[in-house]
Image (cartoon, rainbow, N blue to C red; front, side, top):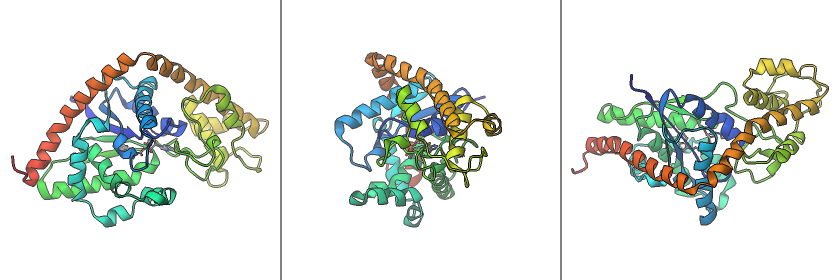
Amino acid sequence: MEKKILYSGMQATGVPSLANYIGAIKNWVNLQKDYNCLFCVVDLHSITVRQDPDFFRTKARDLLTLFIALGIDPKENVLYYQSHVPAHSELSWILNCYTHMGELNRMTQFKDKSQKHEDNINAGLYTYPVLQAADILLFQTNLVPVGQDQKQHLELCRDIAMRFNNIYGEIFTIPEPYIAPVGAKIMSLHDPTRKMSKSETVNENNVIFLLDDPDTIMKKFKRAMTDSLNQVRYDPEEQPGLSNLITIYACATNHTIEECTKEFADSPGYGYIKTKTGEAVVSMLEPFRKRFKELQADPAYIDGIIKNNAERANIMAQGTLAAVKDAIGFPK
Ligand code: TYM
């Protein structure tokens, strides 16, 4: 039987965080065998915020390299830059005309990001979810593995696809989100009421970056915010810091929340839990960091993958775009 299509993407705005790995890439790695997958460095999305050109180019390449270091097979899957496939922009414009401003006004990420970048609330930031819908719909995607924060964008994508199909017939596959029950919302280490974000500007200690060295990781965990209740319970409402550590530990050791809570029940104090969690994260990330360095040292190999995959993605995108244009009635 033909495998179904899986699609996901990540922004190239810095080194990805532990949250990006646990909430998204770890699931991509686990699901890659069962689907035909496309994993995209969504660089067009990143320019809603001003980027330094050299830094941006380096970060985009590092991210694509990191996908491979983290376990994505570049031969079996399509790994590519969004900006190398013009069909994204073309479909995005078309879908803009099938999206209501009321829908975009409701997007919580737009509201959050407008607050963060008050000096540059551009139209791209506003229509960002439409480009995301185009990414997904372009490839007749069945499954989209993402973290919790992308749920609203996925719902909008489905609404746009259904609206379009209602007018023109079954042009788009309606995608399903895949949001893992554990780890879909990893919180900041110092302020566990906020999500961990790779574009953190307040305090770097809030975030574990995937290329942090072991000492830095241990230091950040040791400083993590917990509480003064002195009891080990998994309770994100009452004990968000501790519950976040338990979640991270569970994901890093591939155990359940229950198993980890039990394991920590008799621990001598929260310090012990912070150390154990730090150690588990270090053992999970160290092989990735090493592999990343090896891959970085072989630019010709990475160049080959970029070229080859961009060609594959461009070919794959053509069918849907042609069907969309034909349905709307553009001249042939
Ligand atoms: P981005 O780059 O912000 O995040 C990449 C992925 O990481 C997940 N994530 C988290 N998961 C758990 N806990 C967190 N604290 C956390 N923070 C981020 C995100 O949910 C995401 O899965 N708009 C998207 C990129 C995108 C995309 C797409 C995704 C563009 N087109 C098409 C899927 C399909 C974004 O900015 O993700």
